[in-house]
Length: 477
Image 1 (cartoon, rainbow, N blue to C red):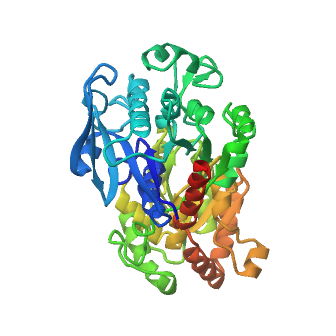
Image 2 (spheres, rainbow, N blue to C red):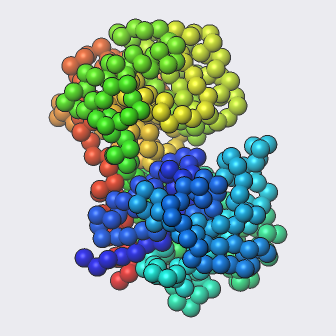
Image 3 (cartoon, rainbow, N blue to C red):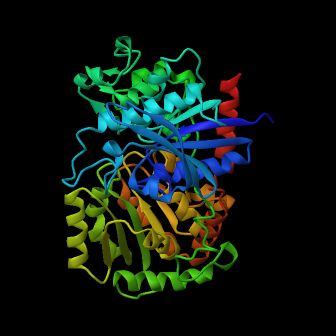
């Protein structure tokens, strides 16, 4: 097996900086790729958390003029993985969310900040560093979308892979920023960064990379349609021969109920009875009524329209009829936050709500909830349902994208064959899904079999890493 070295380019990396699933992917995939003969170095913006978390970092390159300011590249380790940080304080030394300022709006210089990330990635990819000359560049999402555009200016360059984690977030900026990016004039074209008269960072990655991936086969099919293509479906159909869907996995060491230090009682598929202690601890944490016979539903999500949480709000009156309770952990759109807070205030015995994100509480919810509700209108892959499978919280998911690819619906055929791992419902029909779940909850033996199936599902990075390694080797040919 020929060794391959990949330069990954991303704006997030668990545990150094995380706002969502992108960080989990970029933090876990390199470790799994190592088993396939692929070594990875990840290039990140020098956010405060990144610089603070890099062990034994050393300066490997000085850049005297990164959009008018001094910058340098620091190379170090995080959890045994190779990381390079673009240390440019004028761009990245800002506390809080990496994309938005204190007022909640995007930083006004985001176009330059993430152009800087891509420009340094292209420089490292094409010219290398001491002991580092990548065979492949793997850029993630719009923040790294200009990497292939900057690489086009080098006479010799490695192959490029661009992964779309969510087509809805495109990195669109006014055309006036183009002149400040240092790209050739011809790149502002339909085959480059131009998108409806604007500069499209995600569009650039889709148009100019050698291969495109997205995070599930189902989503790869959906984004070829006008309904899900976010105005990029034409480009994606044009490049469909370069597009492949590869399912995400999760870090099964971080998410391992048998060894999880963040839950009340550890368990595995053979000893799932210990989940009851986690369920009690979870109810106490949220202050809802201790009632073992009730179905305990959980939600761990961004509270947004895409995630379908307004649909769940509309179903809350059914909870009493279903003899169910609901616990919500998340943050997002103000109206949805207020809606779930108000629902918890009206019915504190049955509904609990924590606005924000708490990693420890997320683990306890996976370990203690009977089922996890994911009613997304569209979902590229989703990681929360993979964690739910691992922890035996049966996923109740909309039949879309990666949710449909990862959860086997407990329909009559699946129940007869003994292969169901959760429940799917048609998008927009959440109420029907909840009613099916409540009916199955009243069949304890069936529920236990489904939970056992779920916990035995392979949600690791093993198979996805093999497919990425195959893609890299195909590109090198």
